Length: 259
Image 1: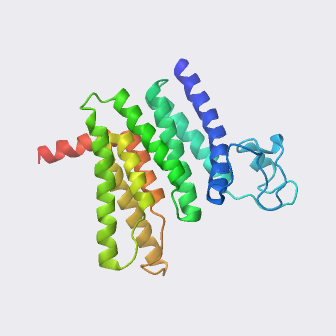
Image 2: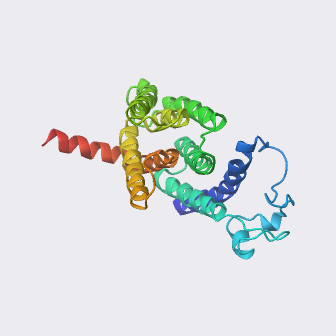
Image 3: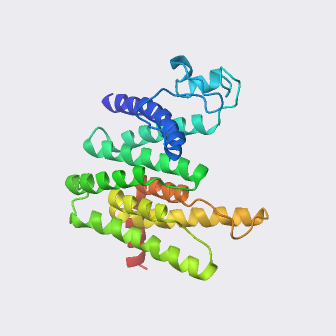
């Protein structure tokens, strides 16, 4: 009964956090404070009433339009809210109430936020990813949920960031265009701090997902040099690894050792 209660509470909390992430995704690239001022319509600047700011429900009731000016409200808003709620509930079901769950929820929220911003603006803000990375390193080193050498969390972060940096430099030399930015490298750093050794399958999944997206774009006639934000693919890999990354790693090692 307690587990069900924790899952429901985490899901509702996730919906609320998702609404906050939407505000952050809009305000941070514009340099607007996320700590002060009520939510407002980007089109007409009218302050949004509390009754019109209920996650998911308000968007449905308003049929995706601002009550004041009728401007369309992007589908990204309810998507972010729903995704955050579902992932928070999933993590609560997997981990249960603990300090580790709090770290995982922070990581999930950060992944959703940087993905949202990267899709819209092609940037991953330092103000988001660097503090989250620092919290992840300290938190996971202290909690050390896997009971291994504590330095492995630092090594995983530095290794993931170094791998992505090297890959980006090689890609630029071979293709003459930026394959990924320093924001992606910093995201990989945070991923390593939170995931430890599971960052290996996370990066692999992220690269595979990105490659598949590139193939789809090429099939649709897009240029091979079309800029595609890589952050969301890394975030997808990180989410998969957060849920089952260690199992993937153990399975791979088992197959490799017995082949």
